[in-house]
Length: 240
Ligand code: SF4
Image 1 (cartoon, rainbow, N blue to C red):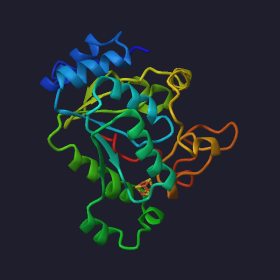
Image 2: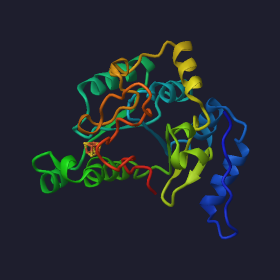
Image 3: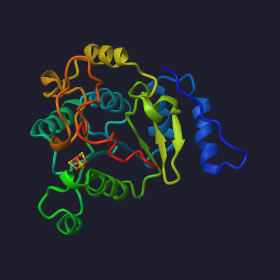
């Protein structure tokens, strides 16, 4: 469960060099060590954790709660979540002792102007994610220099080569569990008796907004139920 180290060009910025040095330093570090180093030392009071309170979110939230239970946790309340996600967000935050979970909503004026009927997801999912996730997150991260993500390499795509710390031109992004396998996650959940999102047992291994998430069939990829009638595969918050 160690992290990949990015190679930067000789023209790398000071921030890129700082991310590279941190990634090198923590190449063999555990998720707990990465969180301790970043939450309580390198970026203390300048770092937030972003969580969807989805199928596997309990792992990163539990790890963070052990290190810093008052870390700001940003939850993007898009207005399109399953009711089960909203109740899980409340239950999990309480059970883990997280004291600083922030529900971030889309801008009301933007909603009224760009999605007055609430059906933008049908016509333009990218614009809907930009309105309900990307821009609200950008605002929520104002004042922070770094944020923690729950991305895993086994999810594929660009995530395969993520380092422990990266610089996206605006913020540092910390990826403590990027090298964890699905078995690592399952073991951790069992070991700590973490509550599952209620939709997991109904066939939802990856959970987003209700209009854009369906249960998956046996043998399908875990993210096959996300935007399954669309070429879209990511909401855009990690598109730097
Ligand atoms: S996941 Fe779907 S409903 Fe949610 S913000 Fe994106 S397009 Fe809109």
